[in-house]
Length: 162
Image (cartoon, rainbow, N blue to C red; front, side, top):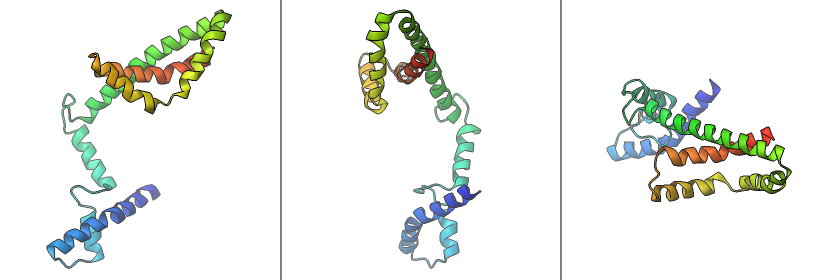
């Protein structure tokens, strides 16, 4: 409840200047109560209030068909499918590399340093490159996101299995 209360206060404070400007342009006398009421009812606030978020979630989850491109459920499925595919591929890759590392000292000495050093590259640096390069060769949609998920997944599985 404290978080929600702080959120409401923050929404009023962040959006008050916009509402004051509107009052001045309309040349309307206003009170603090008017300011708070109108701030929490703004069409496009800087920081939406919790009730505005809930209304928008109802519109995009319940009121839209699941197959609609504006449905939050549709976009959740898109994200979940690429995440699960990347997790599956990353887990299989991690298990395969770990089995190779455990059973072959040559792979242990040659491959393990590369696996560890692969995690020094921030995902924020390589994700856009993956999307652009794969998009240039015609792979769009699920595949680039799954490859990014694979990159995030294979290291912990490899180290955990080894």
